[in-house]
Image (cartoon, rainbow, N blue to C red):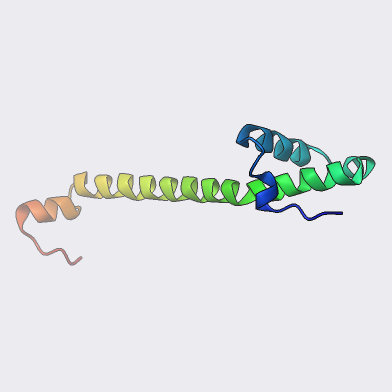
Length: 96
């Protein structure tokens, strides 16, 4: 059995690599064992190759959601009567 590395996937178009990874993701362990060993290894390697990208996408989405929440809360605090925005406008102390 030969080792599947990033260099092995350099010649495969990204769309095909995604397709292989999706196929591997859909199959359960029993179905994977029914495949030829080389095909099984290729599917698993394609899936593993795609995981860092998926992980980074998920992390980016989480950060965007957190920043959006913080932005909305800050806007609400600035607009709220008696909030930090009102105290800034009147020159009152910012300490509560």
